[in-house]
Amino acid sequence: MTREQVAALLAYAGRIDPRTAYLDAAETAAQLTNWCEMLAEVPATAPGGWDAGAVLHRHVASSPYPVLPVDITRPWAAHRRTLLALHTDPRPDVDPDDVAGYQDAMRAQRHAVATGQAAPSSARQLTGGPHPAVAGRIPAGRTLPAGPAAALAPFRPARAAREAAAAAGRPDAFAVSCGWCRAPVGEQCRRRTNAAGDRPGSWTRRRTPHPSRIEDAAARTSRREHAA
Ligand SMILES: [Zn+2]
Image (cartoon, rainbow, N blue to C red):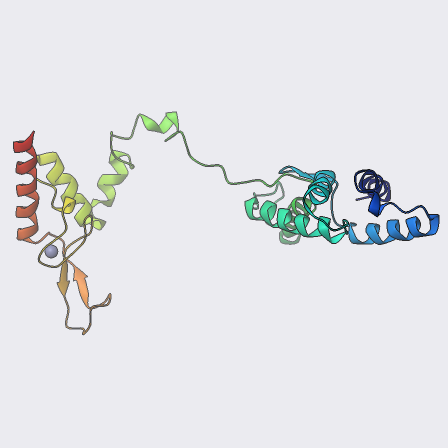
């Protein structure tokens, strides 16, 4: 805050809480100097609803003690942390090969958020599903277009087997947990290795589900069809 802003804040404090108003000119000047020193880093207003006047008003309304500079600086420190937590360091409009310039631009962005001069720039969330230009190429219920999914199939044998079973109308073994190897729902069946213990590394993933798991899934499907 500038000296004028601090003076205005103190005048406001003296108006709503007469205990903080001094009649002596020397005392008033000393008070202004102290407050200016403490509030130099605190903005009067900042993004996210920060308003030093409102913070002061809240203090006077809720606390039995006269307001001190620290009653403004502490809430600002908390608000500043919140702003910085929301900031995600977006790519600055600087040539990335200019390392020093790029880092300076990043720091300048951060500093602007930390001092309340700029609003934090949060990462944009994908809320509307895939882009319309891509949506048409993705089959319903899948997250990958058919081409890349087929190209990845050799590297995702369990997933490929699951999709093949769904396409052929066979029951989905991954919809139930395995009673034999205790693999949870959605995870591949396991085979013990020679390693001791029950930690990762003491078993490997099987490409195919245990036969009892397929039977469980089939029984569950037929039960559901029977109930329907
Ligand atoms: Zn199993």
